[in-house]
Image (cartoon, rainbow, N blue to C red; front, side):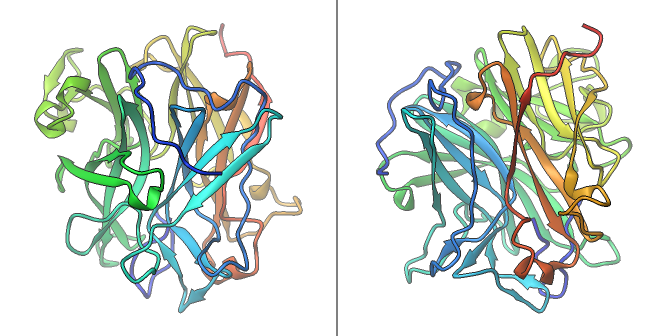
Length: 380
């Protein structure tokens, strides 16, 4: 993702489509019964081609499909950077399927405006802001996507040139086979000023949708919120948070919230593994611009979570590796269990502080996929 100022370009901390069929909210929906590995490629040469993006959360849909949520998305017949600012939209999606032979198929969707020009798939609802669309879940026939509000910030108040400004939810109703015509409704969730915005990871468990938030102060812990599925008609009114007392309280007060993880992340995956009877979290080490991807486990989605074990060292950040560049950094690690068959599948994205390099270094700024044996869980 990239800040929005035209003079700033450094990154932050932080086949045809069928209509969906109804699906029980907590039922698994696998992309295929065969081994299928995601793969991402640029669409260079196409007038409005997908030229790279980050985030890359995957949400299983009914009908053996996945929707992929992408952040700042480069587009064009090639990558373009003007005055250190990439030509991009702030979010886009993709729809993937796996065929009977285990081949992965992905259709990128960059939404168009009335004149046919690319625009954000999820449109900001607040002046002078944009959305970084992140995780989500399916409830009945609806797809819900977490939205982190972001705005420009002066250098005096933010070293990275941007600031978060709230969290909302998008409800996508599948009224058409073409995602260009999907109807999207927006719901406020947490207003600006709270400095902990539920968006980092989302999962349905039992009668609730759980959404995690990273607090933007102290050790930057991970906090837990939830919304009853029968209260999604008004998410803000039904929002609850896990308090330090162990009770679920109405609303959201980060100052009195339980630290689910003492050091969290603004992007991670939290998913349940029935074969292990464990919850697993995949995330980058919270030390900052780390090359280490961690695997953490817990008996409950609210913990207690292990400190985590290093399962992967990102090669793009290792001096001496052919893909290494001193200006590169990597982030956005997350698991995609619907593509697993007893192993572990996750993605990450690498970017560059020297933004003009994006036009030449076409081996970065799109999801990198790792499939590896499921590591033994530490201490078990």
